[in-house]
Image (cartoon, rainbow, N blue to C red; front, side, top):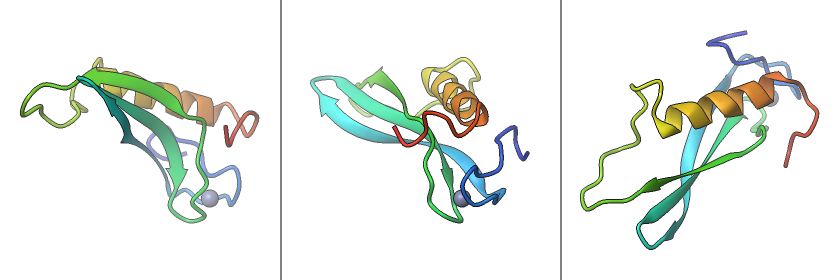
Length: 90
Ligand SMILES: [Zn+2]
């Protein structure tokens, strides 16, 4: 296990990482999804949705703060992934 993220349940690679990407923007709310991904086989783990308030010139997602919304979502996504291959690909 690397960086607390379990090896890929599908191909066994340790090239797993957690990432979040923007999905929908509605009004001043930007939706994101955090999920674990595998660089080797492109498997994806369970999605964790979260939203942040968008302000003019808003900064990048705050990953350095362990209690930020994105950090908490990443943690949840990793936990779901680490729980095992049940409920994946949702
Ligand atoms: Zn894989």
